[in-house]
Image 1 (cartoon, rainbow, N blue to C red):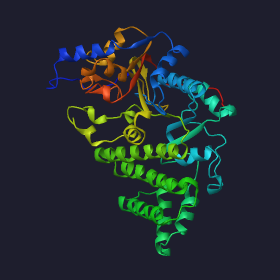
Image 2: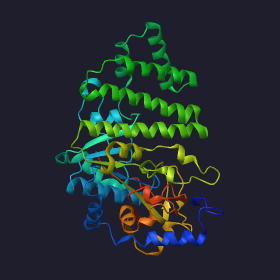
Image 3: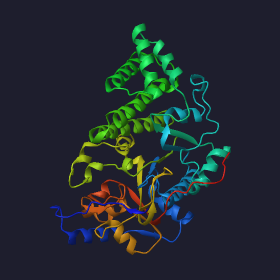
Image 4: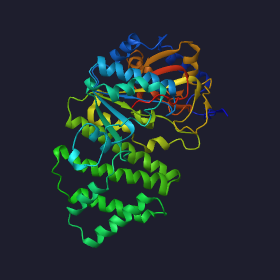
Length: 416
């Protein structure tokens, strides 16, 4: 059954009147560069605006936006083959997994087999061309960064226990740690917050007391990610709830950024494309109101992109992807279809009226041409198709517009 995505309508706000909102959104929309199709010419126009950036963030309004995935995959291939980008960082993929995929530190994980690795969305029809490139075109020599703490392909127990044996922790505590850690991994009985905290405490001690003899401090970074995966589990599943989820956001985004920063600093020649949600690509999410019932929530967040800007300044370019019509669904095969609903007071409403299938809004260019708009509040559905007011020109560098989106389609082909 198709159901509408709910949006928070902007009524009664003291920030600006409905008439003013419509004027601002329409004014911003008028700067869109229209594309009749996605091709090399349209990508050239975007590459010109990316300029000499060394980290490009490609977002998505939802993780099941099939047309967005198709366009992103083609843009990734273009930037990698034509503009010198050589590294792909992926949300949903583990740090240790992809360092091993890069053929780094194999002796530390001798049982790991990444020979048939593919992204977790690797069986999606809309990304087929890029996935085949990743898996079967060895001439490309692309590198990868997994930005998550958890791993899908590599067992980490032996690595963790080896590191444990090298630090000055008494035998009883080591035994208790192994038993508790294995209990957590079995999922066969409920684990307490206290037990999770004990695991985290011991891993912290391993990190602080251990001697890292690996190149570039890989062992430490790997341990930080193992700890991070456990923190994800603690805050999102064991604690859960509204507060737990919000703590999880800050912890996860900081670690995701630190993984990209670690890789870039150890590989100065890396030109990185990041495949991630729009939300994590927000440079200043504090400039967006969450919802009327909790308007200041985002002011408590520092997200992935903001850490990268702190580290690399104007070398970071963040591009959101948005749509104004069509249907989408989550990447899970059991998820339901949702109709994209575009409120009349949104930026997307005016983009839709342009009647172009694709387009690009260069927020940096708009700020340069009309400095008075820089701090102007207007409404957009950039974050999860939920209409929100914000000074969006300072939140992203640009927006790729796709008029009609579609759900992800699972492929019937076999890529191996």
